[in-house]
Image (cartoon, rainbow, N blue to C red):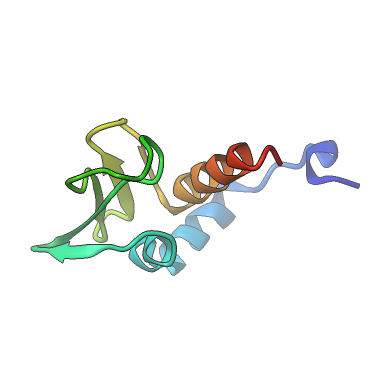
Length: 95
């Protein structure tokens, strides 16, 4: 049975534990190349444009476990990033 059909809810306590146990920098860096600048990381955003962004607009804040793109306004935590990232590639390949 597909996950969508189950209509299950994941307890927020589990999600909170998951987010505190993973590094958002590691998760994002496995998908886009991050550069450390001071206390944060920057990358070219995978969520907008054609991949030819001249300057990085995606900023990853390790201390808060969040990211924000100053161009397309995408933001969130590690789970939000992975959902959006998978969605972009599904749309690219009509999956």
